[in-house]
Length: 413
Image 1 (cartoon, helix red, strand yellow):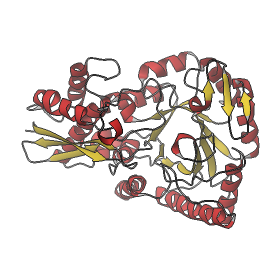
Image 2 (cartoon, rainbow, N blue to C red):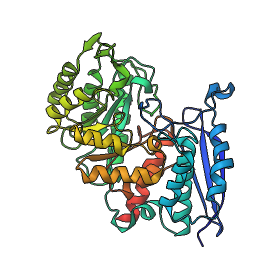
Image 3 (cartoon, helix red, strand yellow):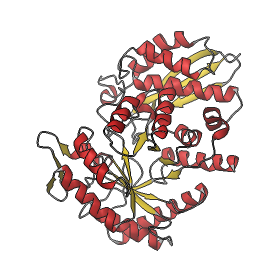
C-alpha cells in the first residue's frame, strides 16, 4: 500500500544564498518524494507566515524551528497515512497548525511536507507529477512571462517598477516561446552593453542596471524584440509587475516614484499606466496598485479591464477569501498563484479552480528566492493555468522550470 513510512527535513540554500527547507517523504514501498520551498523578497502583508529562527546564525534567517516542527510534530501524525489522499494530508497539516496564517508550524514547513507527499504519490503511481495532479485533462502549455529587467526589491538599481517582462503570446509552441525569450534576452544584453549600461543581474536573473526613467526599459525591450527578429505587438508583447505596495505611502495615500521624483494619487498612477499601454504592446500589469488600496484597484479595473490583464498578487496572496473580496468589489481580472503564500497544494489548487470559475485569469509564479525544484512547471500544466513566470531565461533555479516544461510538452504532444 501507498503508506508514508518516514518524513525527513533539512536546511538547504535558496538562489539568494539564504536557508530554506527541503523535505523528503519516504513510502513503505520504497518511493521517495523530495521538495524544496522558495522564499519571496516582495511579500504581501497577508501571506501565510514563513517561519524563521531569528537567531544569530544566517542573520536570523535559519529555518531550524520549522524543521523541528516537521520532525517533532508533523512527522508522527503522517506516518502510516495513505500518501494518495492529498486532501486529507493537507487538512491534517492545517489542523495541526491551528492558525489562520500558519504561523505556528510555519507555511514553509507545511508546504515542504505537502509537496514532498505529492511527489512521493506521483512516484508510487508511476505518473509524471503534472499528470498525477491534473489527470487526463492536462493539455495547455503555459505562456512564459520572462522577467528580463529587474527593479524594485529584486535589484539594487534605481527602478521603482519591479519587473519588466517579455511575453511570446503570438508564438505557438512552448519550445519556440522559450527560444524567442532566450534570443531577445541575449539581444537585450548586447544592446545594454553597447549603451554602456551594466549587465549585472537581479534576484530573478534579469538585468539590473540604472535607467533614466521607469518608462525607458520599455523602449529597450521593444528595440531588443525587433533586433532579435521578432514582431513587437504581434509575436512578442510586454508586461510589468509594478509591486506598487513597495512605493505606496498610506498615510498620504500617494505613490512615490523616486526615480522621477513624482508623488501620484491612485488616479494619476492609473493615467501613468494608461499612457504606457497606449504607446507599448503591454498586455498585463501585476500589482499596479497597493494591497490596501481597494478603492484605487476598483478604479484601475474599471478603466483598464477591457484593455489588458490586471493581475492581483499582494492583494490576493493565493487566498480564496481574499479573492472572494476582490470578486465582490470587482477588483482585477486575474490572480497570481504562489503556493508558499498559502501553504498547501490543496489550497493552491482550490484557489486556482475558484478563480477560473469566476472568469479570472491565472498565472503560476516562482519567488525571487528560488530553488532547483521544478514543481511550479508541473502545476502550471496540471491546472491548465495558461501562464507562468519563472524569471529570466538564465540561472539554474529559473532554467530548471523552463527545461521541465520542454520535457512536458514533448510528452503531451
